[in-house]
Image (cartoon, rainbow, N blue to C red; front, top):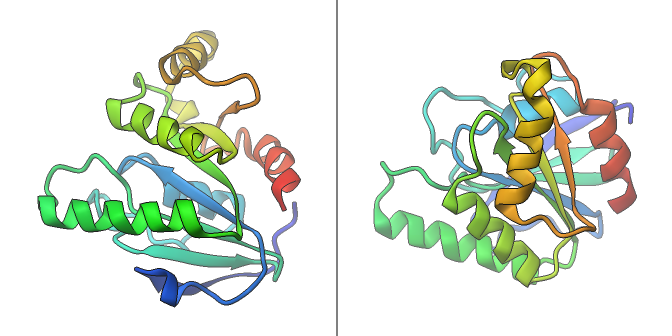
Length: 193
């Protein structure tokens, strides 16, 4: 997909603030520092529409990005970051649950996992949560450029096994550095738009 327009519309913490539109939405979920912001920037050919940070836990709201006046990418807070208070984590949990369970515009969730490591317990919990609510899930295994070519297949298989991916779900290797996997990702995501 050729992206010609991309802009942040709103940062929301509750459904009262969601954009009032019928545009389809694709949410991006994953642990802190997995590369959600870099994924969005690479997909839309922008260096920094979405701010990337060396400090995990920066995204604390649902950030709605309008793409080509056709759909929204929705960047959700990363999970698994320990330096956030329990109260804050609980508030994020409620905010995410409300969005994932009540937003009719939500058509699919991209779950990002780091291909270098086995998916975390939090990754498995998020995948199970999304499947429980019957949301379509596309798993994107980020940081592909950090894995030798000869080991990629085994890393992808390990991620799929650990998450116990259901047959209809797809796992896509992806590199924000090289752009590898970008066309495949658009090929899959366009089916939800």
